[in-house]
Image 1 (cartoon, rainbow, N blue to C red):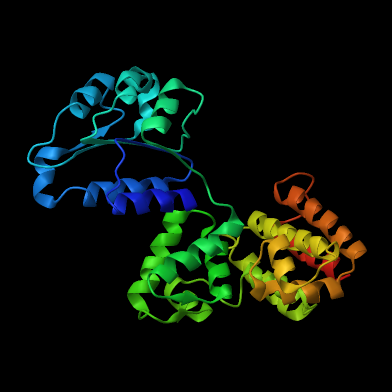
Image 2 (image 1 turned 90 degrees about the vertical axis):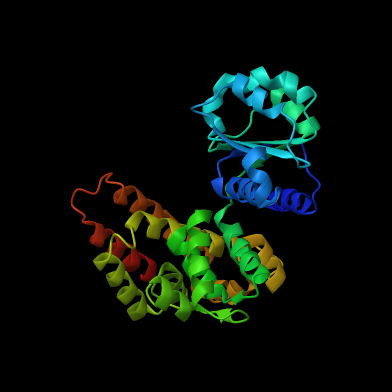
Length: 334
């Protein structure tokens, strides 16, 4: 994320490199960088003669080389973007001669989605030396909150921690989906406002009362009636709240409670740092730790593991999916 911002910052400052190889598991950052180059490096009237889009499945090293070696017409640069570059295979190795001495008036961009660059290869080493070799990595779940906050802050918005958590639970780590929903919220909510859990519920359709965050909180507070109500909602809406996902998030939650027990420094800042959670949620872990001693947490984690195995169909012939979650809650509260 930081590297992508740095690359974009240089491009916006017109500090161009002759080669950009953008590859990796997270397509979002690849799209952001390549789209900015495609839409902003050249003026609109310059693009007809100086901007070429190629596709890895339909092109080869010879064509790429031929286009890249052309000089711009009535412009300072020409832009050549090779999309689906992951399909080029060994063709990329045939361009090492060009990578050694690239034309400075050409901005050659390779977009290799879902395939990271092999940094051991000569081609990659030459691109890194004379251009930009960028690996777009998937963000971890605990990084998505900062990503959401940063995106909205740049657009003049704030977001409640609970609202952010609801989005993460619903959308996971797919940044394209996250951005799509954030765009919707920005259209509806006036700039300068704080996006609330209610805003997310009304405009995106995620329940602010029936989600794993609220289930974790109810369990941590030992609010059994509330926990069972949420559990029943999950059982009645299995497509929206898959059992496997719910169990996984419960495991993460109790693992953090176990980690909290092991901390000697339980200051808010240290807990937030060690557990990789927003400071807003630190008190929830403090309460849960008081209600569930370490020995009980260890027992619960064991039962969550058993439920996970059953949810995947192992040794659960006599159990329905609804029974697995209800049984787990009984074990947690026992």
